[in-house]
Length: 371
View 1 (cartoon, rainbow, N blue to C red):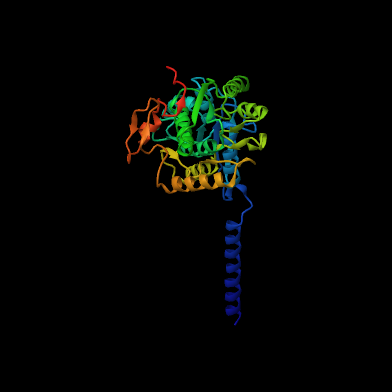
View 2: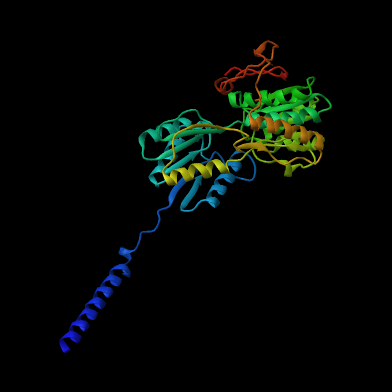
């Protein structure tokens, strides 16, 4: 009987020891034996200017903030006021050395520096906005802003009474010429008598120069002006003269709600969120992305107070067609500035043609300067 009790006690004691050992191994207070914390993905952006509250960089900053709010386990920073020339390569290299695994460079001028750094660091990921170079670890991305430009052209064509509309162009490059052409196609789709008059500022952001160009156009009798720059100088010049304006890059209605009709805007948040998430989960792949209205990367901003409902409805109908893909802006028939046929009836301008545009469509008054 005593032997049986002793044997039972021994079994209970051994069970207790084994349980304690298991608990000790599984619940150790030793910090080195705890599950390591999740490592945050470091992401960086390179900006041309300070984000401010309007314009190109501001639109990217809104997208960055949207991604930051939507995602967990990311650390997102940016470098501002970085000149988009060869000197930016050192900045991108610095971001790599700081451990940023995904780097967005937000200007065409960063294209070659980004490509060079990407070639030296194949384990890091890079994305360049509006460029045309890609690699295994480098994407290019942009949006079909010409679609939103076309819609804003419909608004201008309906709202002009002088049938003379002004356009302050930035630089004579395909991106800008494509925007001028799309805007003009939109204008003349509803008002074939209207013409679009172009003056070049050769700036991305210089309120003095851009304001002067806008005033010169207003002096020549235009009653609607639009632009391809960051500043609000063009819309403010129109406000001073009691003329209408259409903004660009980020919503400018708040600056002059009675005279700004609408604004073609960038909406980068969904793209940045998706690409950063892909880098996190290992599904990121190189691509040449050219997003559309259907993707939500471009759109029109707030309506001005003076835009009639009938015009809004007309734009909504055309927008639906673009989103559905039933037509695109540069479908034929389309004529060049000199009146010769450019795109046949029933034909479509290809992406390659659109991306290399260096000629104006019929209805534009002005010249494309020699490079």
